[in-house]
Length: 129
Image 1 (cartoon, rainbow, N blue to C red):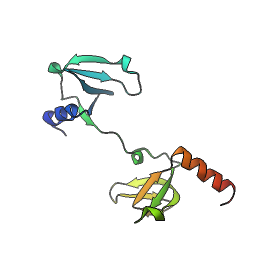
Image 2: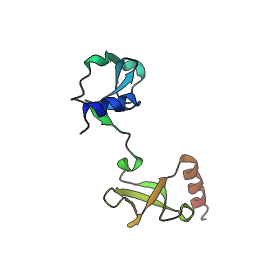
Image 3: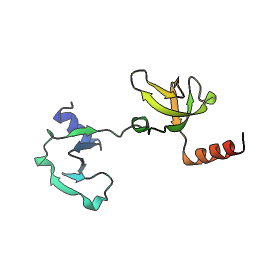
């Protein structure tokens, strides 16, 4: 658990704190409270002097592998060199082994395909290449 000082340093560096389903960020000499996925005009400000760090934790953006759906994510996977990457559906990331699991095999690296790459992959697959 982070100390109050670490939380304040995180805010000063432009980071967010999470508290009761809301985010806190620094704006001038105020703390802006916002709800996830809502426009900025749904936020409110409080003076920084009354901030309570006890109910807050440092917020870090989840990695893509923290939210892999049950059906998996089509990725380039490889061990060693990126040039040797192949396409596989990644179903899980093992934080203990620090490896991605795809089709019962383990890989050191994985990158999800972007929309353009996914379209090209589907086109190649449809023509049997």
